[in-house]
Length: 204
Ligand SMILES: *[C@@H]1O[C@H](CO)[C@@H](O)[C@H](O)[C@H]1NC(C)=O
Ligand SMILES: *[C@@H]1O[C@H](CO)[C@@H](O)[C@H](O)[C@H]1NC(C)=O
Image (cartoon, rainbow, N blue to C red):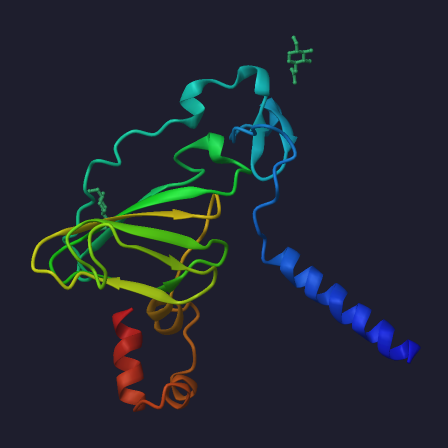
């Protein structure tokens, strides 16, 4: 019985360790923690290095230009403009960020996942699989995509529950990995002809 309990505790500790390793945003331990590049000028650390709060200015919490569409002239026909801790240093440790996503006609944001953030998205103009004003939630880690089913440009705004939600694009990760994954393995995993796998690997 005791052994069983200690085994459970070990499993719980391992689960805790792996959740720490997946690096969720910490809860802030201070009011603000403006990210700074120079560790010598830093005060506290709870994410990136923090600027001395006495030197914090309004501009640390400001970004301009989300009204400007991203260029969608690429093979997938989409463009993501990120507003995370790299654009707004004041977001450091606050667990939130924003993106603007533009879609060309029939453009798509291909299947991907955000390892550190739940996403809540709303369509501002035209239609994806959902319509203007609709709001959809992609829970953290879930594979999701958007597809502009309209024949005009579309735009969406999404908020994510991380200062740096990260993105893993499935096709790139699987077929474009470096070093490459063994094509025989991928052919079996995806039940594809090896030639198709090699074609995809050459593409990504
Ligand atoms: C911020 O200013 C206060 C008041 O002048 C001072 O006591 C404190 O040491 C300063 N903090 C830092 C980190 O410089
Ligand atoms: C997204 O748009 C920006 C601004 O027009 C451009 O600099 C960038 O290259 C575009 N990214 C892609 C992947 O097309």
